[in-house]
Image 1 (cartoon, rainbow, N blue to C red):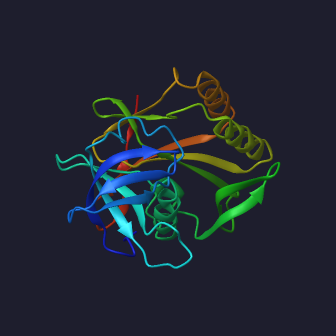
Image 2: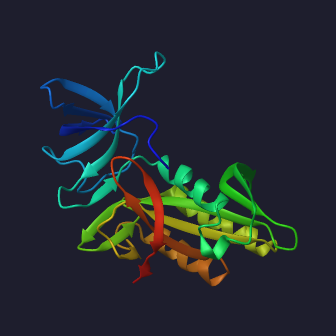
Length: 233
């Protein structure tokens, strides 16, 4: 997935009220950008960090910049926009780039299912069971090279696991796909200490047939694409 508008570099001054970030542009102007991430963003919102912003000229938008990346200035990047994983995954699914799901040719996003829920993707193919795919964006890293999810308590995430389990019980296939939006990780694990209830719900779901997939991404100021699977620890 390529960014629709060329990104520009900036320096983060502060992130506040979850969805706002004050940044300093190279020309010395201080602007407020939209922060499309309601999570804790642990380690990704420190003052002085180099970030990349996407400008826009949409008259309907109050803020003229959107925060997209953190540049770790060591060759690695993190994507902070929680809406991007679904866009990236849709391209990968339609192009059969996810090996475990490559048999499915029809990809439907945002389909209603369960109890007042929407699945990120419903995959269908004649001769195969329906496949329900829930996508989670992963940006937390507390140990070098180890990506973790979640970065805060997520009752919504626990509900998604329960919904997926019910789909398996009805004879369908269900997948929890974690997309790691940072290029400095080669392993993945659940952050059990942050949300024990989510970890327990995941264990229960996996025992009852819900599948887990973890994929890395390639990130730079031009595009974000799906890379290789990551090892689970």
